[in-house]
Image (tube, rainbow, N blue to C red):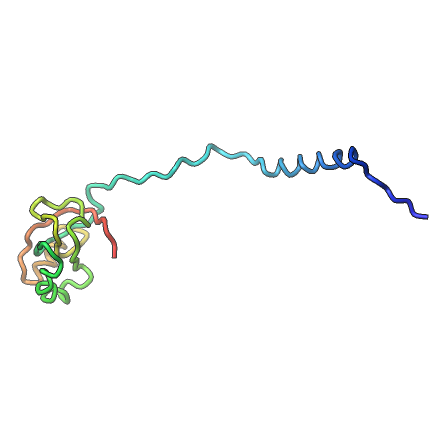
Length: 132
C-alpha cells in the first residue's frame, strides 16, 4: 500500500511564501535613481565645419548650371542645400539654397572654392543641421 501525502491549503501557502521571497529577492537588485529623460543638446556655434559659399538662390534648380561646373572639382566637399540646413550663416545667405564647399577649416574650404575658378561669396563657421 502506498501512502500519498496530501498538502492542505495551509501547507501549500507555507511552501509558497519562501518561493515568492526568493523570486522577489532576485528582482530587487539595487539600482540607482532612474535615468532622467534624455535631453536634446543645444547646438554649438560650430561643429568644426566651414562652408565657403559660391552662390545662393531662392530655388535649388537655380543652382543647376553652377553645380554642373563645380561638381567634379569639389567632389564630396560639394553641398547644394537649403540655407536652413546650416547654423551660423550670415544674413546675406537669405532663406533659399546655397552651393559651396564644406571642409574642416576655413582655409581648406576657401582653397576648394578657389580651385573651381569661382569666387567665394562668403565663408562661415557652421553647424550642419541636415544630413543626406
